[in-house]
Length: 123
Length: 110
Image (tube, rainbow over all chains, first blue to last red; front, side, top):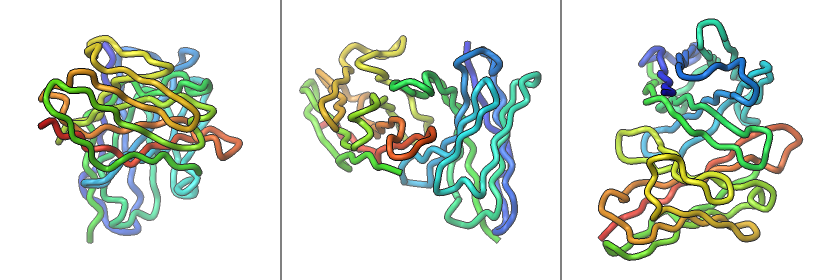
């Protein structure tokens, strides 16, 4: 049974760095083809993909946010970590991690999602 | 990066068929996947690939694609299908992997 759970601070101040951890079970990020993505959703708005890390430690970022994002993994702990620097109130959102399959084919999809964690950016 | 365009809102009478569309240049190269999101909940995958349903998704959900448009069809919509629906695909505009989501469609079942 695949599960993912996001954890991190609920409140950060502007200019601070956000660190979120995705702890997962039911699959291994060392298995070929396995990837984990981070996706966020501002209140009342659409989903936005942020970053992806694959089983081989290759990393990809949203073009619009790549200067602020870093994704990493700890395979032994079944964790993926996302850091986002220079947080701003517009970054207030629910942040999700999701298992990602077929990332390098024409059929990429997110089959399991965490419940999400709401991060508010405010002084 | 490229964009995926969805109608903001669609309504359907209970038991009728509704089609939700997603348009974008990336869909000429990549399949869309579709997600259902109910208030306060995480998205749930309902369609992926050419027309594949994950285990547990009712067969009234189906997907199709033509040119730059992908469609999610619900045949015999039920009250519990009222939700926001998002499409996504890989982004074809760059030379590296990137993913794009549509703006979402709010489905109301009347």
